[in-house]
Amino acid sequence: MNILKKEDNFDHNIFFEEIANIKKDYIKNGFVFISSSKFLELLSYLGVSNSELDFLKTIGNNLPPDPTLKFRESRNGRFFHNNSQGFIYRTEFQPFVLSSSEDFIRHDSGQLRKFTGLSEDLTRNAAFQGLLRIKNLIINNISIHPRPNLNYKTSDWVTTVFNLRTLTSKDLLGEPALEGVHSDGVDHTMTTILGYENMTDDSAITHIHSNEEKSGIGFSQTKKEYLLASMRHKNFLDTVLIKDNEHKHSLSPVYQKNEDKLANRDMLIFFTRKPCVEGHVSFDYDSNEPHPDYPVKFNVQ
Ligand code: FE
Image (cartoon, rainbow, N blue to C red; front, side, top):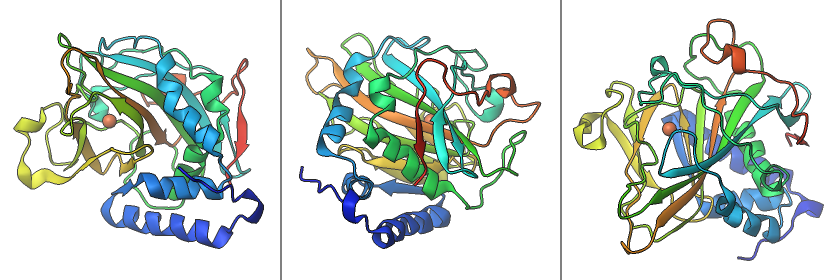
């Protein structure tokens, strides 16, 4: 990979033109695939170095077990986008909950889940911060179908980031979305691949369904007329962005190429929504206090 460091002659025009093009597609379709090469180009405009990019590829090697899913390793952390003052920062720890009223139907729906926090190696990485900054630029100032009990009067956002590894062995099938057809209870879901090993080409395909599709069913039960698109994260930083309240999605499992070895798939998932108001399932877990032990703060542009 040969990424030029363009920080010194940052070309605002090209960078913002590229963001505007992605935004146009996103507004038109309600979802957009951003290729690895496009993301690498955007990050290079932000001055992200090759070593910072390379580091992201290894971050999935140091994840603890997931609190509720056996085939997954995970960490998470929350970020507050203060768009009126132009910065994003990490918030204090909050438990995480998704309920069936948000079209998330799984054995742990409604359960308060406590994940191990993201490592500082990740949150201080310029490539990681660049992903959040670029997402922020794409989702700002576009209309979305609002969810109940979120505050759409503010320009701020709350993002919960998951660093996930899905594992498949001979005995256990790794399902990136065990819940079948679902939404993530947010406004904008972004999924970015960091890497994979021993995974077949038909693994982990993202399907986008119209909201008429029934939640909680497997892909084989879905209706063709509700299927809007299918796409696959293949190269480092291939990304899918979905207006989460306007479309549902599902994913195929992670299959092993060689059954004697584990298959794995490493992702960053960015769940972004407006701050909660009273009545929302996450209202009591929506702090915007900075993280007391591992604070991180960076400018939006
Ligand atoms: Fe999802």
